Amino acid sequence: MLFSYFSEIKNRIILLLLTWISTFYICYTYKEILLFVFIKPSLIISKLNNVYFITTNITEIFTTYINLASFISNQIFLVFFLNHLIIFISPGLYKFEKNTLKQIIFFGLIFWYLSILLLYYIIFPFSWNFFFNFQQTISNNQLHLYFEAKLSEYLNFFILLLKLSTFNCQILTLLFIYINSVKNNLIFIKKYKKFIYFFIFISATILTPPDVISQLLLGIYIIFFYETIIILIIIKNIISNLFNKVTN
Image 1 (cartoon, rainbow, N blue to C red):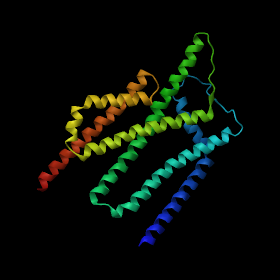
Image 2: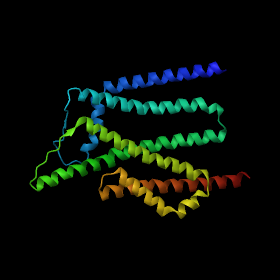
Image 3: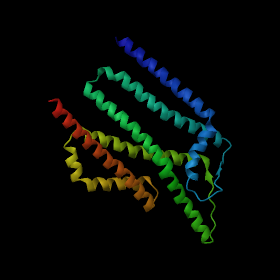
Image 4: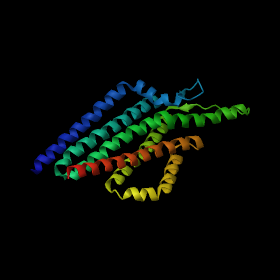
């Protein structure tokens, strides 16, 4: 019995390694397309048409492609790792534990996808435009400073914002599971709603650049999903109660 467990773990590790290697190979093959996808958010609302990137090291372009392919491969590897982990441990879980784990994974993936969309179309374009505006302001005041974006630093900045956006959106996953676990939590959340809103805007301030409009947009966006989660849970509880009354 113990040997079969070790054999299954070995097979899953081999599959995960093959997944990472194959994903890395595909990402590196289409590295130019992926790099453009990462650069595109800086062009969404940018008013400058001469955006370009520089490199200061002969190996910088190569290492940037390697880091880009590695980052994407790690993200896909994480999804497959969670899938293998759930399949491996699910036979030893109770039914309610399986349902809770499925909810965590399901909503975690949804909020992970939403965090990517949020970063790609809102956070990063506003951040890029906000910092570029300093160059235009200084130029208008007859003090000419020219910004030349370094390719590797741009990619590191994008990945950092993506990690922060993912972390903040995953808080919504934990919040959903917490609200859904105990019905009395709705009373607690209603009582301390102003403190929760304050925490949301603090998170938005940390995530976005020091721009009031960006902070308000992100805070309102998170509050919208926060209130949507509460409404969905209330509707779910009402439907569950009605179903229980009908069946009883």
